[in-house]
Length: 289
Image (cartoon, rainbow, N blue to C red; front, side):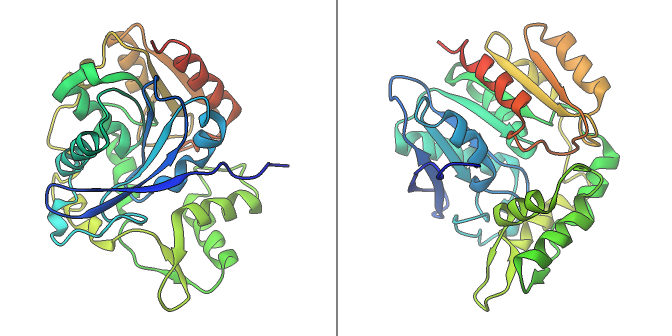
């Protein structure tokens, strides 16, 4: 049985365009670079509870709500829901919180942000985990994501919400039990003002994502390669339709020092609660100076 949840502090910073943005801070030694946990497109800081439970205390863990997600303020301009804006927001966080070096743990979109930040200044990245994301994203996976992003459904109970997630993600998590779907629902959703349960993000994030070329338009291989020379771990769900085995192989070829882990019977994305994932992250962190 799981123990009590690790305690954290809610903290806030201000984006360059004046939004109040939120992150969770789990205490840890200040003489080590913190773990900066960056979520996927529709996800939030709660996604990284398994990472914080395992590594908080030993490491300072910062779990970010990107603009328009979780407890961060929604953007006034939907077209600001863009990776380069998120990077600018994170740069503001580093300045305001006095962070000059960190270990980036990026899931999906969060991994893209990790690569973009490395391209800006790789020296601040002490190490990185890319969770089910790489420099090339499979078009079929993107099309699947577009089928559910920005649809403002709501549910009367957590059980209804968890069953809806099971309908959407059954193929990506074939071994999930009822308790797993409920846990996923409570990370992805929250109560609305009218007492119903809904996805915890601004539905307008779908607008730029659904623009032609809105999910791509840049060659990420050069940005990925700026992560060379530091501890790096790529995790792939064996059933992933966004990160292919071929792309992971090419990532390993281009950066031979990178560790790679494929988790069987998991699609997009691994939760990072998997024992093999946590062991691989621990091994990466043992190499952080």
